Length: 394
Image 1: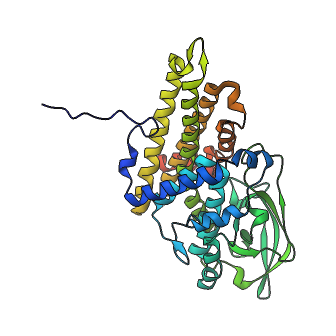
Image 2: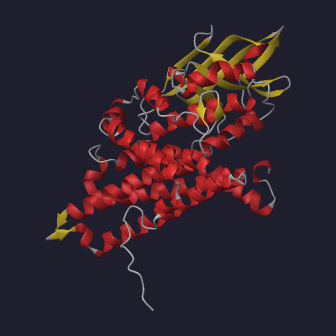
Image 3: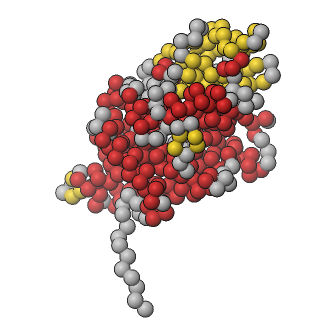
């Protein structure tokens, strides 16, 4: 029996996942990867240090078809969920702030309008948002209510045909640069969603500073002081907490992929460094302890990437349950953070400088670990799925 000669594994695609992608998916991956390498990586360390994300980047992402790319119609490409995930992976290999911009725009703000909005609202907002000309944000979290959004205090009361909105939203990505905010509020008939546009009297946004994580991302606090909204500002299809939670499930799916992008960037940086950093007369990659670290990082990177791909195929086949998304976010963010921390040890002191991407990704993932559902919340979602007992209600 003659055994065919098999090529040595690629260190960055050890299990040859590339063979599992379609030609279109590979094209999307290469397009986004080239954009990140040419437009993001040369400046991201400075953006991170300065605490900025250029506004024009939104238009560039829109021109590539990356905003709301998995939505159909209204100027959106209608790509597969897997293709969207691949784009998220490549964007976060640049920086979580860039992926967060695209994720909030497409999977939170645009998806809320797409899923729950009227036809008039869709026609008015979605085409401009797909192009990055109109920026959206998603106002759910409050200063005292993160993991328990049902307790939100923001309230919209009826006043004739209008609503009067009062309250505060916290940790809102894109908040101060948004042209339209999707705001969730208590009403006399339950939680409802509203479109609050920039410039409406009583609506202000204040940026949050002194962050050590997600610095290349605009994070804001939104304030609503007797903001008068016409009835046409309400999302007619959203009734209760299921509205915003459905949007979060969409965004969390992108995080499953994005976390692996950050992990890959740190693994690649550590691998390259181990081959060139010489100690005791040879590259540190030649020492057993370093090789063990790299091997363990590779295992979790490839397993997490396989998990993301499997969940992507399930979503494309309409077989993905929200608990599956919790499974993916819990595992992939946790393992990506562990990979980044291990990579930092290989780089030693160089691992804490912005000359290398590791500490930046590591710090970013500290936020990703807790936003859009903390690791504890996703653990309890899985616990409820396993036992049939909801731990949240006591």
